[in-house]
Image 1 (tube, rainbow, N blue to C red):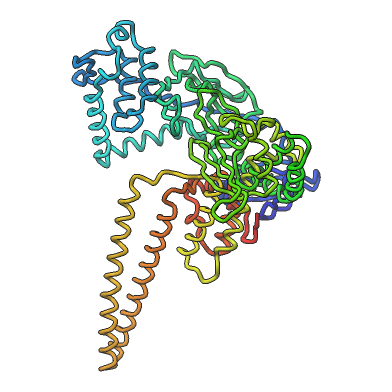
Image 2 (cartoon, rainbow, N blue to C red):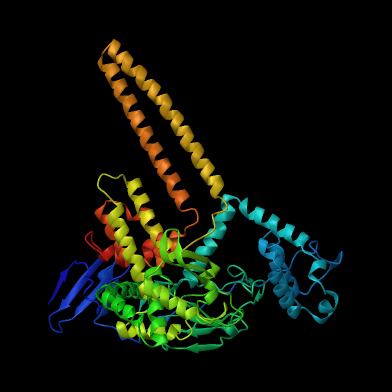
Length: 610
């Protein structure tokens, strides 16, 4: 006999599969085998449709059966109309379809700053020439003599046409997108329908990269079925490739979670079609990631004691490792990976060079200050002045002694060796886990500090964003101010000014109502007075909301809150905070984010602390 109960999955059951994505969850306890089975169900589904897992899954096997339709390939190139010409040296020139398609990539970007950069222009012209016919290559010698303006104008007009589509035309496109989603956007994983993340293959185009990437402007080639490896279960229906094509390979590897893979030509790295973040496997991986970060709480004190001991070690390798882990812990720096010479010059902790730091015995009233200045991930500049402990400062002076600016600061350690050391301290521990731990700890501490009783929902959301901002600053999650920022702020300020004028008018009316009621008290004058008082109160509350919005937008101008929220902050912290302080989860997470963190929304109560 089986007993059913609706419960929250306790974090201590780390060996069991987490219940994900669904509104209702049930636990069935088998008396015969004494095992816990997690069932997943929605109110709309019957019990027979529920997904479930039993016991602890294999460390290697991710699924038993997997079936899907394969990737959706972008449509083939549609040649330009005959009246739209490419000009070379002032003369119209008819190009081959392959050459013309690459021309359209560049022409579409004419009004973008990328096409004004020399590296972008050189890379584009070099790759473009490789795709030209022999005749075209003989004629087209210089990019400066190429005129893309007519093609650019054509695509600008096409863009305007799309913007001005009728409601009926937009509905046709919407229905087509829904059809593609239904056909390609889902797979069957262990008999359950799961959403796929990126089922559409990226169309060909020009690589942009972040910052001053040395490969900007290079051609991203069209992906053909012959480039794609399909992964599905052996007993499933293998997806059919487009007519006239075949797959590179079909494999049945249940130790990985990707559905299709190919090598992109810019960096020669594999790319994948994966499950949607809201899927069961992705959610489970997320849950395990944050549980690993929480386990670090039990070990972090001993790890900190160890890296402090390393600062005075006789071995230079140990000293460098100790200082590097200190930076990763204190500053949430990424570990940094070795890259080839053709990658952007971005660095992390282990790949810092002497030129990236400046030591100040005393600066701005603080002692032993290290000034960091380097390009981090996505070519985002990391600039920080940090006071460090005296022994760390001494070690850094030792590390840079007799070295040139381009030499490695930590020349005795690598990212691999550093992560191996961390893993020996705690199984599963890496530099990224440290980053996740410090980010989530910061959010929890800031929320506890900034949220007080009696706040309005808007004030609580401002406090949440400020806590999230503290994490984004710690993790160096910056962004350029949005192009529409000034305009949107101006509109908001106009609303604020208008609301102030309305309040002034309402106060005048209230004053008149008070006078009228005082001169000739009656039920009618009393009701009018109460109405005017409520109007002033309502308008004042609306003004306060607008002013909070203004403050929030200004403070978030150059800070990217989304990155930490999606990747480094345990969602249970946010969900528990929402439940404890009666803030709708919808105010913190949008629909996509709520799907991704459904496991946290379902399992977390208001008492959770990271």
